[in-house]
Image 1 (cartoon, rainbow, N blue to C red):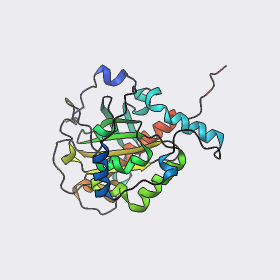
Image 2 (image 1 turned 90 degrees about the vertical axis):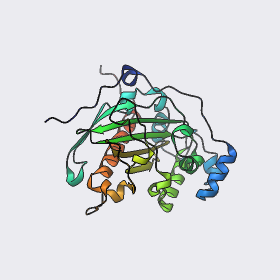
Image 3 (image 1 turned 180 degrees about the vertical axis):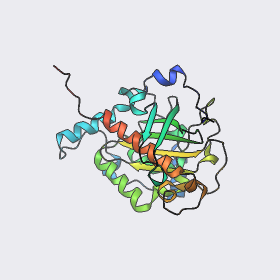
Image 4 (image 1 turned 45 degrees about the vertical axis):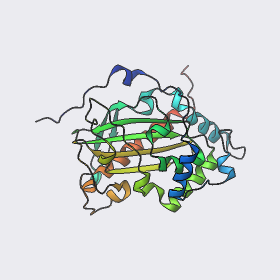
Length: 274
């Protein structure tokens, strides 16, 4: 019997460009309370004051690429940032090939409405210009994955500082900083809520003002009591449900390919053939 196929996207999901929206910010009092829980402060004046003005010490080509990446959230078509299909040669457990189909693109939204307060606080030093998200399913429609890109207001130095902090404090592995999924009605991801999150990955880029993440779960809507970061779920011999189902590979594989799509759109303009 052939595997179930995800329903087609609606015209608005496959044709619209991602449009700018007015930024939203959580209340200062709430932010302060969250900071107390997390213990995360500002990275420093050099970081919090960093904006997309370029780095005079950097190579001109690198600066240009960084600035092009910063504008992709409103200048690139949806299909360029979130391709309708993704191919993951060797991306599955044991080097198995994978393939994913996009089932929905999230509507225009701000970061405060789509990320947990603790994660917002962790990203506060670099700010948030825009959050883009899309949800994919695998070839058998047994898993669903939301992949997202947080476009920040920071320069490369600030992004480097944030990346260092995330690595030093292992923030990307904390379950209380796990990204939220996008549950799209009328799709196999309709039941993909916070309790269904099984594995996730998060990467702070330094060649673009972007934080890329992906969070995955089972398409049947089952809850997961012990979600695992992708790195641990991909460890050989891991016996948890997310690991045995290959969900860490799903999250990492999709995040990596969307990251590549972003870099491709931010590449140097090519000349028209003569």
